[in-house]
Amino acid sequence: MNEAAGIYAGKDRFEARKLVVEALGREGLLLKAEEHQHAVGHCYRCKSVVEPFLSEQWFVRTKPLADRGVQAVREGRIRFVPEQWTHTYYQWMENVRDWCISRQLWWGHRIPAWTCAACGHITVASEDPSACERCGASTLAQDEDVLDTWFSSALWPFSTLGWPDKTPDLATYYPTSLLVTGFDIIFFWVSRMIMMGLEFMDDVPFREVYIHALIRDERGQKMSKSKGNVVDPLDIIDEFGADALRFTLAALTGQGRDILLGRSRIETYRFFMNKLWNASRFALMNLEGAPEGSLDPEDPLRLPDRWILRRSREVAKETTAHLSGYFYAEAARGLYDFVWSELCDWYLEMAKPALRGEEGEGRRRATQKVLRQVFRTTLLLLHPFIPFVTEELWEAFGFGARPMDQERWPEDPVNGDEESGPEMGLLQEVVRTLRNLRSEARIAPSQTVPSAQVVIPGEGRRQVVEDHKDLACLLAKVDHLVVLPRGDKPARSLVTIAPDFAAYLEVGSLLDVEAELRRLEGERAKLAKDVELCEAKLRDEKFLSRAPEEVVCKERDRMRDGKLRMARIAENLESLR
Image 1 (tube, rainbow, N blue to C red):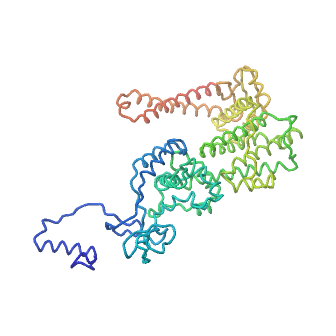
Image 2: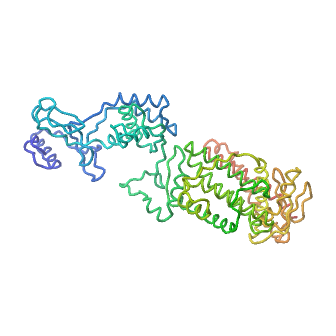
Image 3: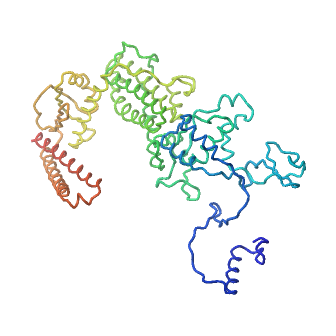
């Protein structure tokens, strides 16, 4: 307590409070003492109780500055992405209060104000004054407070470029095109940079503001030192690699959504790094002695080659559009799906016979050219997300001596081979159907099915499968595939009736048919009971009126799926008998 406390001067505040209460009691002035709950401020670092203390502070009158900032956004001179944050910006700027800019800290920019000891006048100047501007006295003392960090930061867009001098850098780089930041400092930093830029430069500091996601822990809590839930990126990089972390953050950065970051998510994308690396190794092993020239119109390309070339151009166009619109998650996930589900799962598997020379030397060289072209495009598209892995692979492929960031971005037009997509889709669906039949029959992956039959009514579609049935056999592990416009069901076979074709897998020689019939009958009986229970629930008015909508929908889906499965089992029972 200070001298204003009288007899309590020099005592600790908590001790003084007890003494005051005791004195009130002795004087008969204390009516009662009772517990009272109230919010007491504490320092976020040392947890000490913060006592209110009135003192003189420096303020900025922000209303005139904020009005210009609001006008700049309304006129379209600044755009927020996602658009929803524009409303947040308006809310803060239209209800702004005067800004206290003085802080009682050791570090920071000292407030450039000097008080005259002789007359008390305050002089504000950019250079240290030698005398009071009012009385001329030389006894001046600079204010001990420092500027609020956000005040200093608000000057950053132009103070770093030589301002207040009119430097070439200032003319070149102000205003900048884009600011990337988090939503939690739109008011603290973004709005104040806009206010300061308009005041001192008479122009906005940036044209677009991209508000990125906030990274939270796995439980959705904001990371903070006090909570002890901060994920150190250096630890993550040591464990998973820098590119796995980068790609994870990009893939989870949906506009307007926070990122819940956990090790399991990062591990998923580390597997993607491994997948890309292994696919590249496979390609490199099969590119020894390959021609480095581009594809010629005379090169003998099959459907998978034409399809993957077109898909790589389509993915390049989609990725460019996503990045231009700041849809980073969509760009990352699109590349992930292309590499994993199209390039690796389908094209590389279908390319193996040609690369082994089974289709002739011309086909081998054409396939090698396709591999080089597709991997070149893929690495360039992935480079903004995983620069370390792509740069390493780029060098291994020998695509060029220049760093990748100096290469031309893939912008080849998507034209020609429009039919390759639907045709490849049909071939993929045939393979998937045969694989599903294998799975239903519980045929081991190592076993090859002797024969299968596909019935396709349309001549053009049938010819597509006929021309590529060697690839269908390879991927579905079938020795012999018959493609017909119509036909009877082969004996002892499983069947799937798809929208565009019927597929029969002859499994009689691989199965104990009687045991399989018993298994299917048992599964059908179990499904019938489940469907009956679902139907009973959905007839119950109490259930329909009281259960949440998502629970009712789940029951309907369960009933529908059960009926579909029963229909499939009935088909297979009929086929096996």
